[in-house]
Image (cartoon, rainbow, N blue to C red; front, side, top):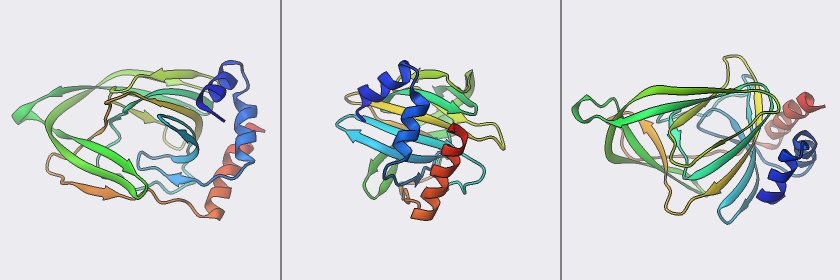
Length: 204
């Protein structure tokens, strides 16, 4: 289940079969603060493999910053079903006219440690990319964006990440918010089974 092996499965047209096989194993879902449920499948060195599910049938996690963020890692993502919009954000330093502060997010075993930086910014909506079932897209590290699913819609993706040395995970948040911690709570066995069932039903 290594990063390279999963990427090869996707590029050779076996993404759905791979996802079904992965879901048949032992997994634990985690409610992610960016609005989806994550099934972490592999983490080795600077590489990771996850399944992501957006569904109105699942309660979202509380978000303390905003949906606009950038990764410290390069994203390779494949849409299993549904529609995902990758909304790029044009972020500029703004001084007295700033509307948001940049926060650094450090993820550890006990959750996300979110710290305000000195940088304050404004942002505007940039390019909007729309991806549907079978589409694969990439996003380089350090690119501010948000991943959006149409209201009431459901989507699932295979998300592969490869870290870049020196990169930072960042998020835009309120100007006056302070440092805080957000716990990523694992779903219990029943909730995880429901997540697996939702994805499996759409892939079979």
